[in-house]
Length: 227
Ligand code: NAD
Image (cartoon, rainbow, N blue to C red):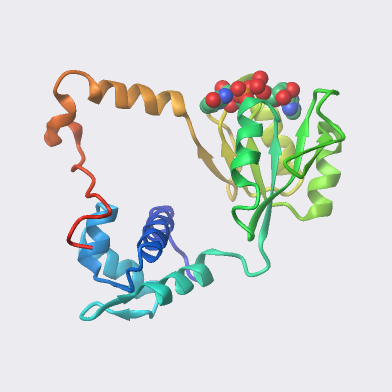
């Protein structure tokens, strides 16, 4: 089994998003420096990432976009697909279910859980919502290894513990509280409020216009001539 770092996986996922956008515009091949500009990494980094994992083109003649997408699909996606459970069908939970409905055939939200009696035993965007007491049995029965946490902060750790005990090994946490998880469980915290505060800082006065202080280059646009 190849051991790949979290950063590499994050870049591969980003390359895939960019390549889909290029493919949608009819772009058939792309050079490492072009993809690097879009992803805001070095061309050497792009070549290293693909060299280690994918034999889908040559840096000299550019990568074939379709072949690269297929190679990334084979590497990143589980062939049999993966199911996720969502805990907390409130404003955010419903928005996530709506966003994902039919979007990723290989990555589906198969079950949702809530404590609100008015929400359970119902379908939300075709996803069944069960009482949270049924979580352990349902998660095991459906072979779910991915969890999405959209409960209030005070309930997030208990929801995570329950999911982990039931066999979940990856969590996307939207609650604004850091989660404790044992080794072997991957946790991604997504805190929109913190992102907004960070961007708000750089949006003040002329800070955003100064890369040295802002820390990032301006993002190249997808329709730039280099692509
Ligand atoms: P919400 O109050 O609308 O929904 C929370 C849902 O969780 C409710 O349906 C509630 O019944 C359920 N719940 C509560 N305790 C539970 C438990 N122990 N087990 C299972 N379900 C339980 O809240 P929201 O606005 O959807 O936000 C959810 C979380 O996401 C919060 O932690 C919030 O800070 C965070 N968040 C929300 C937004 C947003 O735009 N709404 C954005 C970023 C982060």
